[in-house]
Amino acid sequence: MLQKLVMNKIINVLSKNFKLFKLMKYVEEPNELDHKVLELENHILKLEKDSHPPIFTKENKKDIDKRLKDIEKRLELFKK
Image (cartoon, rainbow, N blue to C red):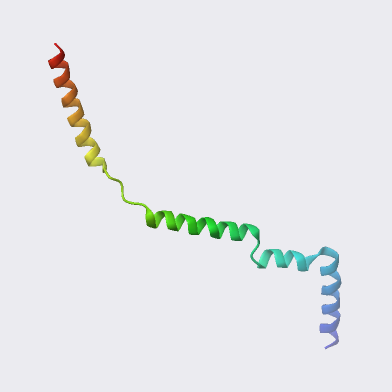
């Protein structure tokens, strides 16, 4: 019993000297940056929800590139 009282007093004195209560409050409770991160995460989730898949896939791009090359060749022939 006495040990518990002594330990509590020692802890209180040390915590006041080193401002441990403030430090623990800062570590354990949400702070300004925690709120900011949460806000950004919510914003990202909303953007992901509102976004759409890409219009063209890689396969589409290959096909389009092939067609463009063909058109360019035809234009070269037409110019001559």
